[in-house]
Length: 451
Ligand code: ARG
Image (cartoon, rainbow, N blue to C red; front, side):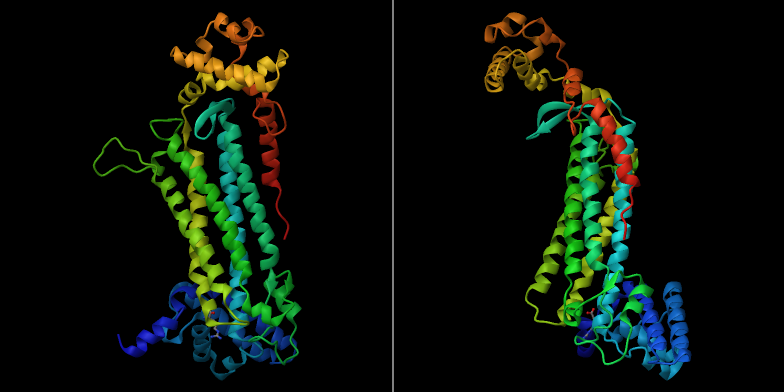
């Protein structure tokens, strides 16, 4: 490669910013319409530029567009092609505009679409989790703290926990959208433009909610991307936790779920293997999404106002994060809606009689003991049972009574079911509450965010 080519390659962004072509063409068309409306160019000129731009979009879509690396970026490629197509009038397109406000506009348009797609995919995963919760009513699993069996819960309650994490994620993207939804075009290179432009018109044409208030800020900042990255990082963190539980639960040790064959892979040497690669990859990909968040923050932190070429580096990480998040959400929606639950295995694990230790303490409380001392008594019981190689349910009433005279025959009525049913508080795991929670989840899904 010649020295000159190497140098051009270093500054070029065309191999990745071509992804912005739809936004770029839309922004340009809105801009020339406004220029004509304001009498800055003639209607005929605007029409010719508009038609040229539309045919360029068509060429890009059918793969016939002659991309030129030496033209550096998408904007220069499109403008050069416009000259080839319509001649010198193409030179009027860039009136009252700079690549600085142009590229900021493209990125905001792209980000708005990405937010819509992300919210749609989050919602699809929420629906899948809800459907899986609904087709497994009454399925009991151990709930864990410290990955130790803690208290029995309904599987649907556990799944709805993820539903709510994702609901907050969807809201976070909606919140981010308010600040993305602002038009920078009309800021020029940095100081505004010396033409009687109508920025509000362009904003309406492009579907923006408003216009930026400071031209220097508009071309210099990318905080709206930081917000997308941050919301994406939180969402991937949630998916990664779900991924981790998917790996655990589908293992032979847990065996609570069986993933559909399409979401497992075999091993090249061990024929018995059904590896949860999709879940593992999602967990792994979370790292690069975090990385891009740190990348954009670092990119911005030392930049003097306004535009600096460093900003060109805002794109690849962002596109990668969008792609990673969208595909992970899609894979998870499929994986969650096709898994099957091994009801017996889950129940077996939840039948571990020590899992009802808290219920025994609550029993003593109902008989007048303070919770703290009840806790101590049951801890002693657990130790005593363990020393005899038994679970709590296998101890005799005498054993119980030795530790507290408050114990009676009715302790044997304490069961996984009674334990779950007793957690009948808002947000608790009782069947009644979970049923209500599932109805509420449907309402949350149906509710569309405005804006
Ligand atoms: N490719 C550039 C970017 O993505 C477009 C803006 C170029 N502006 C400039 N002053 N060189 O940031």
